[in-house]
Image 1 (cartoon, helix red, strand yellow):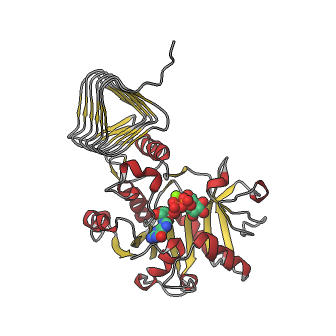
Image 2 (tube, helix red, strand yellow):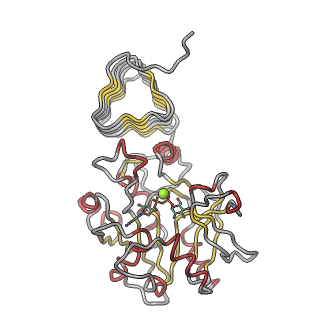
Image 3 (tube, protein in one colour):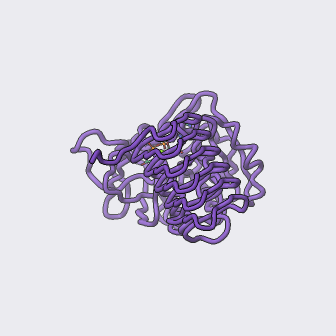
Length: 360
Ligand code: GDD
Ligand code: MG
């Protein structure tokens, strides 16, 4: 049996407009809290025991997921009093693991949507005899990630978290946020203080001659850290581009929850998800977006690549493109809100107040 640790203690500040009461892993993506997809994928790969390492807004996880039996899992929760960083969080849950020193333990960043073949990562770990194995992916701009160059056999030669200078950008291979650790390696992380696995543990292991193995897998991969990525990920789950056994119902152009009300001539496309009790008015168009629980989109509104928080209200004929509307916010009729705009939870924008179109 393989067991896993899921890191869900980060603040997710970039999703802040939506996350005043909800930590990022609990924001619904394709109809269910995002974390459900990661848990269900781990279960499908044979993982039975998962420890959630939590810190920020920790109290919301357990009431929702309970002991994990609904997902066929045994779930445990450990809450840090002060955030311990990624490495500190891993060390802090070590006493809950059942694995023996040489056994493999899976570790996942809690904000990644991926089609990674988890069993292949564990196999790579076993066959190479590595101390730690890492899923690597290639991205066009690696600056926001951990850079992981490897030699001809896939063995990791360096780990450079968030490179600052052009000279440091030595590869387009990045740490994709899924690891297999030998249990004994977890026990070597110092306890009781913050530790970054990326800045301290990995470089330290390399220096001491440990074997870190990279597995490049070019399957679907997305870090949902920004609202834009979150909306994209939700739509890709609905469309079936990002594989998850937890998407309710069948994949397709849209996911409309049973209790949502959608006017017959409203157009919901591009993997949009419409949450429970949400309402979409006549002639409205919603494309590649997520409309969360109880939100209202009035007639004639046009919504693209946007996230509309729970209970938010979008007025008639209003245009949203690449917008994030916080829970409970009210955007009046005839507004135009474009790329990058963030409307805070419960904020109000009166009718006909904002436009972006040309002055001609
Ligand atoms: N329990 C706990 N405590 N979890 C934490 C803490 C903490 O103090 N800090 C961060 N986490 C969790 C976050 O919730 C997230 O799931 C994961 O650890 C990674 O943290 P992020 O804050 O999302 O890091 P990042 O996206 O900037 O970078 C990480 O992920 C990249 C891939 O998306 C690094 O691992 C990079 O090396 C990697 O390339
Ligand atoms: Mg992240």
